[in-house]
Image 1 (tube, helix red, strand yellow):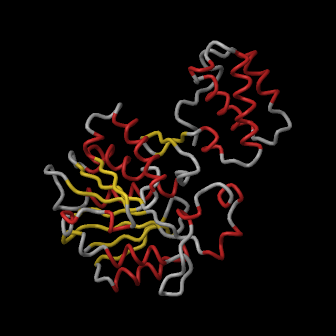
Image 2 (image 1 turned 90 degrees about the vertical axis):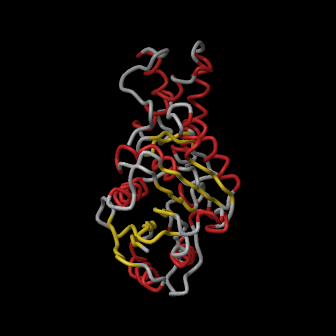
Length: 307
């Protein structure tokens, strides 16, 4: 995946010679050449440096230095594509990942397959929205992919800092997608406590990418994840099942039935080793059609069930 806006060759405002000189400045900084090219594209597209090669060089050196220090490229650039939207991302939120893109694919398929969802619209809830990646993608793609022209999305997070990022992303999306701002509602709070009571029994689709890393797995995470991404969005306590990192998954699954309308769908991202425990939790909650969907790498990645 390459950042939105990245192009081949010399971007406008930066000729091939300048590009080559800047590439040479990154030599020995232990940053992959592909990432250096993306940083170059970002610098060249910055209107603040459009007329100043010196300013471009200074910004380029600063961004390469951040990447060389181990900061994830997505945070260095400050933006990253997720399906059909471009997101602002920084250490207040998780970096959007391909696995979560596939969660949206499965969620849209559940909407499309639901005979009770049609032209009158549908209600979706994204619990723990972070950057807003899932919520905004659903709002943009529901009409074309799932045949739902009027999807009402409620996106919650207990982190006010994360919701600041989601709000910025929603505002940016609203400038390019008509009506997006009116369709997506951001609310602060922990899981279902954030939602208005009027949604009880009305939710057609409930989606979540909750924390599911176990506390004893933190040390084994990639340093770019462990040292930069928000731990509260990654790590969850052990579940009642005894499986590491399952507490939030179990809370979401157990709390889902009152909010879902009959036939409404639940889609929750999980770690592969949590598949059996997550399916058991869904059955205990009285949900039906319980299954585990795999990601594009063939790993068990999503719990899917219906009320």
